[in-house]
Image (cartoon, rainbow, N blue to C red; front, side):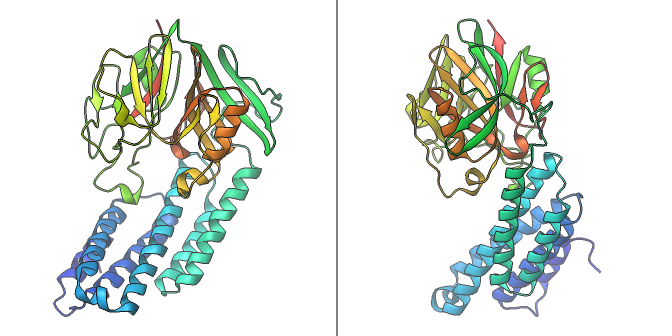
Length: 394
């Protein structure tokens, strides 16, 4: 009997009787599937799954490098099916993790995920994929019909108001030609407010990075409002093994320290720069130097609204296509905005903010990380995060 998934995979790799790398990778894959089934039914540690994830990815790379991969069409198709269905399963599992972090009941989703993984273990890729598609559709439909569970206070009788507030916090319903959406938004005059970014780490961090709840960032910086920051790799995600709680995009924190300056891969990611009584939104962070005279720099994606025009109409990225509570930072003239739009995908959020008259807006992290603070949590608290964007008095 093996104590854990990692030990079993190690045993598989050491067995001299198993010579065929295809066999090794298939067995490793099914072990991971078994781990996912187990994890889908419990909230116990996912460290074993992370280790297993690294192992199967390594084996896939080895298999692709062999001549048989290049010559054997059947083998190639098998690998493609493994990669596709495994990726679908992990992405769906991470979506359910997000919902758990938002305190939603996921028991029904867990059952469907287990069913899809059972199909995977039998190499029934078409049924597994169909079940995963059905599961993701159900999640989307349920979220569209239900009130957000990460919102504090009443959202059932919110008045319709399509105009962004001039100052302070507002919960309002924005009516568009494709539906009505609840928005939590905080407006601040940049003549009296400074926008800063606070980080849990003092500098670049690649793995096991420190994180804090949004409320802690607000308290230690003396802020009166705050929102979760850039996309990062949560430690609870199996695919984040080796880069837990790290983020890749450009950022300058309140101590004038620039993060990820050497990461050219993400230099095309949009960014917002706050300085004095103005905010500047740029399409690619590569267009910004390393000026420490500004108040803050934060890169994330996508850019939603620019110069009063909607500039994001949607894409194939799963994290942006699904509906949920989504955070943003925006500006109109010398007024800065932070907020959360509920039950929208990223493209819909762009149109909602445009309807409110917000001239520039950048998408922030979402899902289980979504959090907004103004005298207390208005949304969240969500999971602990590596950085946050804050409003402080000048």
